[in-house]
Amino acid sequence: MESNNTTQMKVILEAALLTSPIPLSLDDMLRLFSERIERATLRMLLDELKQDWQARMPNSMELVQVASGWRFQALPELAPFLSRLNPDRPHRYSRAAMETLAIIAYRQPVTRGDIEELRGVAVNPNTIRQLQERDWIDVVGQRDVPGRPSLYATTKTFLDDLNLKSLADLPEMETFIDQPFGEDEPILQSAPEMPPQVDFIDNSDAPA
Image (cartoon, rainbow, N blue to C red; front, side, top):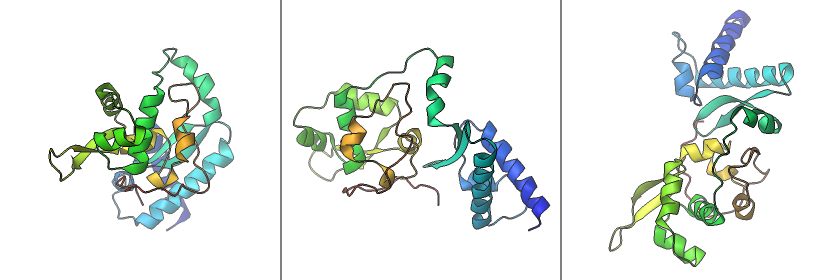
């Protein structure tokens, strides 16, 4: 591939990523080009584009990969300033909601009964509904037992909002529960170097 073609392709990718309101998957970006492009080539171009932005704009924007694909976003340290453009403070989630979300994230798929057994208290239906309305959890099936209770798991939106590529990037559960969801600080902008050793099923289908 000639360098001028590579440059043009990166310009197209950059424009698409900057103007898209949602992360773009590899399949989305492959549709930008009329000629056939290997996925490995596309990943190489994205890595180069990421490095270009790190060199050109090291203090403002970055290209990141999340569960749904790739997107540009402001650096975490700019969040307190950018939040002034939206003075309405987002909802702050209760510790009960965070504990419920953590159990679903780390033990999924789980039923409401599983959550109640682990927490030792009944789960408020409003808590489940609140997390579903945020599109952080969803019903992924029913357990094959009497009553066929619903099984809950996290969504790609959950991973995207936490800037994670997969469930393996989750921090330790205690750290997760104590995160200031709804505050000016961004949510879990970086994952730990080593993922926790937990028993979960990763159904995120993160892009390769």
